[in-house]
Length: 303
Image (cartoon, rainbow, N blue to C red; front, side, top):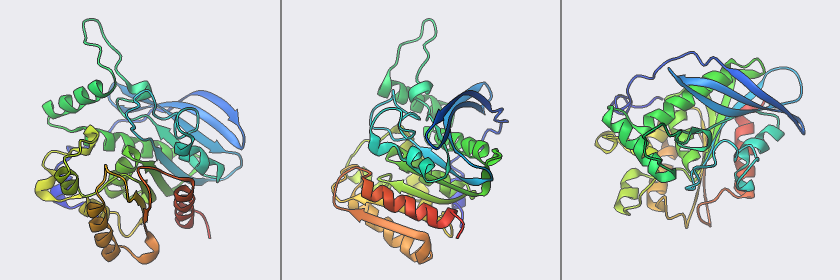
């Protein structure tokens, strides 16, 4: 399946530029190499990311690891590669240790993509700068949701073009904002064959009923006029989707999560869907990560 036309029409055309990849630094780590790289996402805009490459020869499956939000704008790509932040969020590093090539970029507004103040500009920090980015996108007839999606699609272009990656075996993973963005990426980009979203979504109508304010990339203007997140999830089929949600996660109402699960079970083949609901809050525990990695491996590793 693919995104319904009414939802696709909410996104402007993706700005296509050549990534023009540059490797800035190589660091030897246990089991392989960590590379700091840079590539273009739009004309005049370049992104820094970490690329984890295991030892060995041949082409390996590639993973795009999308970082969380957590109100910590000083953190981005460094957390999923295990260089900073919560070790429970080092899912990029853990998948590298399982033999995947892993790419971890910054989202706009985080880590190396925070505001670089020019002379005379207001010094906007953290959530204030994120809000500015959201409003700036609206003023230009765009959305922060679309920006994050297009940037991740450019990251997939980079990952797929690597000599060490099998472009027919691409997947993704993310928690919270990372789970939200990886879900949209999978729905919009058929190259993503298997993804896992941890605590990343519920029905938007359910979230609005609870009056819970989310990250600004959650809001796609006009979305509720044409669909909801169950439509986005259904668009990933017949590819593979895993998702986990906590019973006490106040950010993503369980009623909306269960509605999405019902739609997914009616849409996906049983072996292509892993819908998990666990007792707990907004987290990505070791138990859930093991299940996520096993699901991804079952669809991307040779049998």
